[in-house]
Length: 210
Image (tube, rainbow, N blue to C red; front, side, top):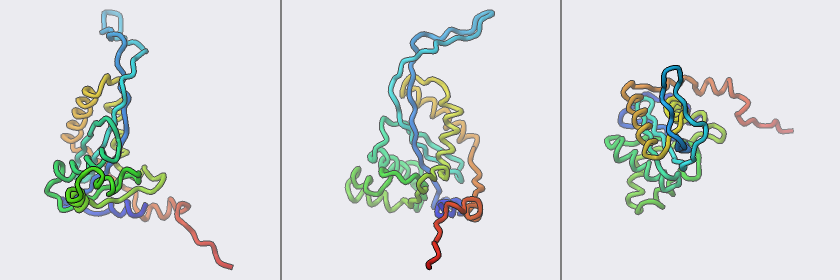
């Protein structure tokens, strides 16, 4: 926990941008009947029933100090998909960075081995050398600011029926553009000192020897 909090306390450094990474999903629902538009004396109406139309994965890249985020929609959330996200982070989003500081949950798909499974050794090593990983502890996903940003996405964009993956990509891209244009970010205030006081019970203790 303190490792992640210490990372959050670092000053902004464009050469070493901080990027929080997380993932979620969205079930797509197709309408079974055309919604009824507003008519005189009658509000808009839509059927309560719907047809399930698959589930898409959402990868969230969130750089709070850069006031930037990106949502990547995929079919799956395998280690190979994660590796592709890391290469995209290095080559597309922050190609000028000396090293990218990545905060993410400690999942078994989030490991250097995934890079070597996805790419030839030289390419995997090139990507790995550009990344600095920091993992949230078990039951500590609340420390990942990308999880907070996913919650904002859910409230502002995903709280309605979205029929298919193409529509999901359009909706998340529009939300992303609005948030980036507004330079929306998160001001993290919980520090290591706060954790030592407020979360004291979570710290290991030594039993006195007899």
